[in-house]
Amino acid sequence: MSRIYLSIKLGLTLLMASLVFSGCASASSTPVAPTSLSVQLAWTHDYSSAGFYSAEINGHFKEQNLNVELIAGGFVDGSYVEPIDAVLQGQGDFGAASAQSLLEAREAGKPIVAIANLIQRSPSAIITLADANIQTPQDLIGKTIAVADGGATLRFNSMLSLQGIDAADVNIVPRVTWGVDPLLNGEVDALVGWIINEGVQVREAGQEPNFMLLSDYGIPDYSALIFTTEKMIQDKPEVVEHFVRALTSGLQDVINDPEQAAEYTVRYNDTLVLDEQLRRIQASIPLVQPAQTQVAMMDTSTWESIYHDLSNAGILTEALDLEKAYTMNFLNKIFTVK
Image (cartoon, rainbow, N blue to C red; front, side):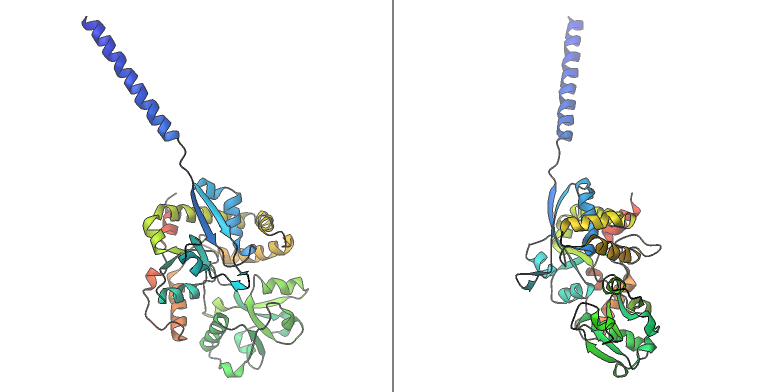
């Protein structure tokens, strides 16, 4: 009897273990529904968002169990979509903005935080034609320079000041067109623009440009930061980390295969010209990942420089805790823990 009892008991034990194991296996194999997110881009679909397109089409968002909607920015119904306000109003989980916009928002009490950086080195430059022989900021004295209002004027004037040049010795005129015709037609000697946009336009017009990057003369900037809200970081840090992981993979794909990135870009906007997008992506790559850096990174000294420039210009009038305006936690985790 004891042997029969033991056999029955052993059989029941094995049966229960099998059922428990089966249940655990079934539970572990049940797929977790992807987290749905949206990103409010700063502009219409074009080369500037190529990292997002690569993250989506190459499956990096999916690998992080994310379902991501990319919302085009720019002008909608005649009004510019402000990504910061859109995210704070719940119309997006993440957004793209410049450092100046983000710091101004922080001063106004808006709880947003930069978590990644699409372009580490600012594309802002003084663009001239090569045959004008304008090589240094001192060569601008007595010349006519087209500069857009706002941040471009702030950074240009800061550069002049650092170089010991009196702004009164330079003929600064408002930039009234986003094209490069005034430069090509000889209406101005130089213009302040982006080497990845206006600089490419000059070459497309058959002319050779010369660039003086403002960052080479002590004026760094972050023009394309990715941000989210303090609440998102506090409540869903793992989601933010997964998002940043996917984005960094997408940015690396752009660097590794710019032709693919250009093709993806025109999928999102079929009014674009493939070769034109490719040229702009290729011009962007040295700025997206400068030598000896990881993609999407930010630098404390750059943040401090931006903050001081804005404060000195009177654009920021209250003291800010700069460390709360951005976080390196997600990027540091991604690039130190494989």
